[in-house]
Length: 291
Image 1 (tube, rainbow, N blue to C red):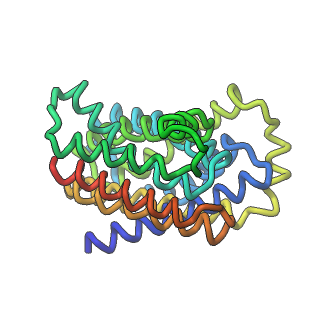
Image 2 (cartoon, rainbow, N blue to C red; image 1 turned 180 degrees about the horizontal axis):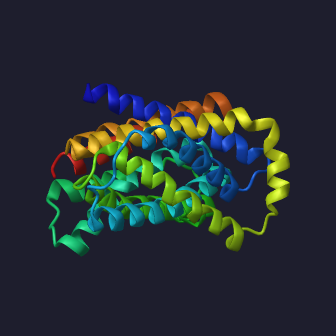
């Protein structure tokens, strides 16, 4: 059953990314796209909340789920920003850097010392990055510098960082609740947070985005439903403590996103970016399966 959950999560994540990218191409602001996603999540949570008792949830749960919501809202904002500025076939393989950031966080906060295989895996991931952009005719470091200077890539790294830290708090909330209980309050706390971000950080007028989004209500609903199920599957897998192997399998999603970018958005350099994805999957697995 776990493998079904993993591949279900991979499919839903890729589908939601495609729809989010399509909405951004229609002129909707990333903040607004994320806000509509959380609105759908909150509505979908209501029926489950009615039949669930929450009196047993203690302070540790509330602190962890709120911090997870806060960090994940930021992660979603930067992720959709990245999708709006970056090819999906570049966006997907960059997910490999999640294991690099997780390793760095473990070194800093947990005092873990990576093995040689871990360092080798990071080197493989970085090597794969050189294939994400076409050759510039210069030295290899210039290609990596070009990649890192792209605003969409920078937004992707910020989203990965925030999601990685948020995962720690999600794990903490799951120690005191079921996956469904965490999902409900993760959704409900996230909605006011993203609405505040829209009010104070977005230069776009809300009414303009509402008008632009009216022809795309079906996409907005589909994104919210996909994220709801995807997040539930993620939380179930986390609760079962299959973290390393689950994250290793999650990396396969980057190959699917390279294909979708080529097929749906006619993005170039398919073979080169697919090769980059394969190399970066290998590096991710090297890092994850040694832990």
